[in-house]
Length: 175
Image 1 (cartoon, one colour):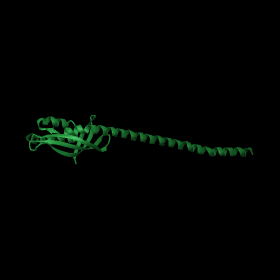
Image 2 (cartoon, helix red, strand yellow):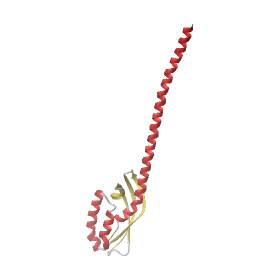
Image 3 (tube, rainbow, N blue to C red):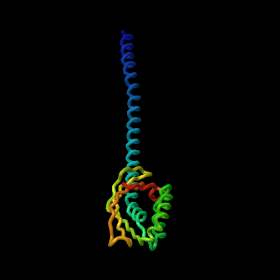
Image 4 (cartoon, rainbow, N blue to C red):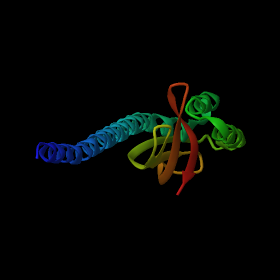
């Protein structure tokens, strides 16, 4: 009978061990999954914070950039355009240079002065490297052909990108 009791005790013990051994891998998998989810949540939060910083910086840059790019004075035309170019980059900088070069003669003949002011901005899309903003822009213009000052109300989508630690306009699309 002693052997039978010993056999029964061993059988119960051996039955419990596989259950205990199965619990350890299950807990390990659960801990690894929880750590992975926590890591993903942290990374998502970190990227969102970086995107928010990019948006704040681009929104802070946009009014000065729009004012510089969309304003000029025939008396100081070259300086006005040089100021606008400091906010431009890439293909847009080349396009801006070509457009303003063609505009110079007309601006001088008509004694044109255009002063741009941003009335409002809003975010269209944003990543950490690129921010598209909808800019509501008023251009106050006067020249020898108009009596007084005229106001043009424009909407422009400015695409800003980070270049050497500064947000620059890579594209401007009138809508």
